[in-house]
Structure formats: C-alpha cells, structure tokens
Amino acid sequence: MTVGDTRTEPQSRVGGGWIGGLVLANLGLYMAFLTPIQVLLAEQIDDLTTSGKEVALGWATGVGALVAVVANPVAGALSDRTGGRFGRRHPWIVCGALVGAVGLVVTAAQTTVVGVALGWCLAQLGLNAMLAGTNAVVPDQVPVRQRAAVSGFIGIPQTLGLVLGVLLVSVVVTGIASGYLMLAGLVVLCAVPFVLLTRDPTVPGIPASAVRLKDFWVSPRLHPDFGWAWLTRFLVQLGNAIGTLYLLYFLKDAVHYPDPDMGVLYLTLLYTGGVVVTAVAAGIVSDRLGKRKMMVSVCSMVMAVGSLLLTFWHTWPAAMGAAVLLGLGYGIYVAVDQALITQVLPTAEDRAKDLGVINVANSAPQVLGPGAGRADRGVRGWLRGAVPGVHRGDCGGRSTGVADQVSPLTPRPVRPSGCG
Image 1 (cartoon, rainbow, N blue to C red):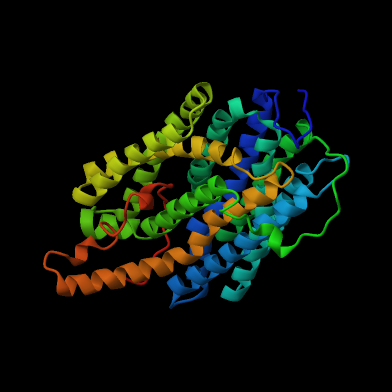
Image 2 (cartoon, rainbow, N blue to C red):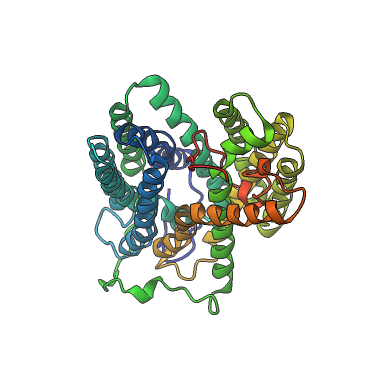
C-alpha cells in the first residue's frame, strides 16, 4: 500500500488486512473498556463493601470517566507531535495497550474501593491513549470514498466487544482477578498484529511545540460543522448514559419481565445483531453515494420508531422489536457519523487531538448521566404528585427519549439505589 503525506487527504484504498488488524485492535480495546464497567467492577466492589455499593461503583466509574475526558485529547495532541521512524500513531497504540493492561492488573489486585478507583483510572489513562491512536489512523490513511465502510467495520467491536467480553469473563474464566488478567492479555495481543503488520507513515518536520490548554478549544464560530458534530454526539451519548442506567428497571417495573437480568442480555444480543447487519452495508452505500447527512437522517428515523415502541408499548415483544430497530439504526449511525466527523476536522495536523475533543462528547456523559437521571427522577416524582396519570411504573421507561436509546443496550447496567 502506498501511503502519502498524512497532512493531505489519503488517496490509496486500504486493504482487508489493514481493516482486519484495526478491527482486532478495537475489539481488544472495547473488551477492556466495557467489560470491567459492566461486570468486573460491579462484582469487585460488591465483594469489598456491604452497603453503598451503587454509590461506590458510580464514584469509581465517574472518576475513571473524568480521566478519559482529559487523557484522550491530551494523548491525541501528543500523538500529533510524535515523530521518528515508528510513526506517530503506532507508538501510542502499543504503549497505551501496555499501560491499560497494567492498569487492569493493578485494579485486579486492589482490596479497597479507593484502590479499585485508582487502578481503573490508570487503565483508563492507557486505554484512552490507545484509542487516540486507533481513531486517528482512519483519517490519516483511509480515503474519504472508503471511510464510512471502514468506520462500519471498526464500529462493530463497540457492541461486539462488550458481548464477547462478558461471555469470556463469565464462561471461560472464573473469578474477578482472572477476568481482569484475561482482558489485560487480550488488549495487548489484539493490538500487536496491527502495529507489526501495517505501516505508520512518518511526517517530516513535525514541530516540537508544547501542548497548550488553548489548543483544545475549537471555536464553533470558525468551525461550525465540527461544533455541531460535537454537540450531537454529546447529546446522543448523554441520552444513552441516562437510558441504559434504568433499562433493567424498565423491564422490571414497566414491562414486568420475569427475569430482567436475562431480559437485558436478550435485548443486547438482538441489538448487536442489528448493528452487525447494517454497519458495514450502510458504510458502503454512503461511500458510493457520497451521502452522509441523508444516511444519518435515515438512521435517526429508524431509531425514533424503536424509541416510540418503548415509550408507548410496555410489552416484551415491543421491547424486542425496539432492540432490533435500534440496532439497525445504530449500525448506520456508527458508520456514517464517524465518517462524517473525520471530514469536518479543522486541520490534518491535529487530527488525533481534534478526535480526542470529539471523544469528550463520549466520556463526559458517563459523569453527567447519573446526575441527570436523578434530576429527571425528581421531576417525575413531582409530576406523580401534581399530574394524574403519571405513575411510578414509568420510571426508567418513559423518561428516556430518542437519544437515550441510540447506543448499545448493556448486559449489566449500573444499578442505582432506587427508582423513586
């Protein structure tokens, strides 16, 4: 593969081996990201404290999310300034994987909630450095006419990684520590093929300028497309953080499903199947038509129908139909929206940093979501007393809107202390 200067838009298409290596690296990354949040951290903190485990878990994951908010754009900015014969992305991918693996091992060894939180922060630091590299290689090396298809391929691990990670730590290994150690090994092993078997083009004459705080401000007045991309991504992920938080209670209190835990898992599998079906196909169609906004509009309407099913029909068949529709819609979204974002980045020299700023829109809602959910429940509590027909069983169901249902349904949601 001939790779040109990464400061210009790439022209040469990437091959199947390049795509497969990046998909594998992302699979290991998202297994390490999501499995601890949904399974291992919850079980570990449950063993360490007899009361207040929900608060402790929210605190640990919230602090980790704060680290992610800072680490990803900073690592991206440093990656943009990295020179040498190894390139400017590969070193951050492999070093980030190693630091993330160390963080997972450290977390596994902790016997206090504070220790768990600190270990998880170290893991988040490394994994977000790796994410900065894997995100930036797409606009660096994938031409615009292929970018949505590639984004579709690498978007699949965002949902598949969680499902596979949960199965591995639940079936293949036993014990919390063994789960962490398996994920630590996998994140490194999955990153190695891409780093060893693909080229990372060097950029001559990279200035050794220091990273300044003002570098992370991208003016929405000067770059309005970038500003809108950030805002819409933030709202989607904030809705997801609120919506998935109460999914289990929605199945329990509104749908009255007899086994809510298994119900969430079934919905997740249906959702993941929908993503796999549409992600790559939608990306290929978008690349051939050269249409991005139209495809995003289509997926929004598909997801809106799924959300309406959850809003007005609190039945198990409706929930399954909604999961399929939401998965189909999100598969389109994950491919086309990511490609669209790479086309509105302000400068080629700061791609990793600017994608890191976009990633703040993914991480910040993990901190704000629980608080927003509590505020929402407070408003609904007032409505229950003031407006006839607003019932307690609506908690976790009707309080979520279209954006709440956009991103993956999770097998093990964070459980709040109550639904009132």
